[in-house]
Length: 193
Image (cartoon, rainbow, N blue to C red; front, top):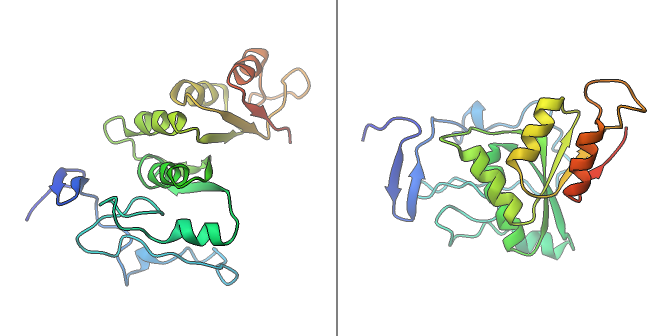
């Protein structure tokens, strides 16, 4: 059946976005980047390989019934909090973070290491959902416009790493008094470099 990328269809498990071909098993697009060191990895988890079910979350498939086994793996190792990054912030990262919380784990998202697709406002919606779930957003080295955009679009706790007060350190990527007050009002954390 001919369908356009990003079209929304009804799958057996509910609405499903049709994505452009990517990460196809057995092709270079599914390989890890050559600079990524994987020899010491304890687990390389495969997801999205079932032809009838897409997969956003690292914890369960899009049918919301099929577990990947990740929650049990993490519990067996005593892990209580996970940090996430990757593609795409508003789909795979969001669903993994939400499912982490649903499975009893704390979750932090490193926004500097994420990219959103922002399909029809999906980035703002993802930020709202993650904030409501108590997920922490980490930002670093943000210029002023990006800092305020992060706070405006994420209602939850924000950690600003590698930032300092402009009165102490010059630079447009340091925090001014209004930004520091906004972080305090959000129970945020400011980490200096």
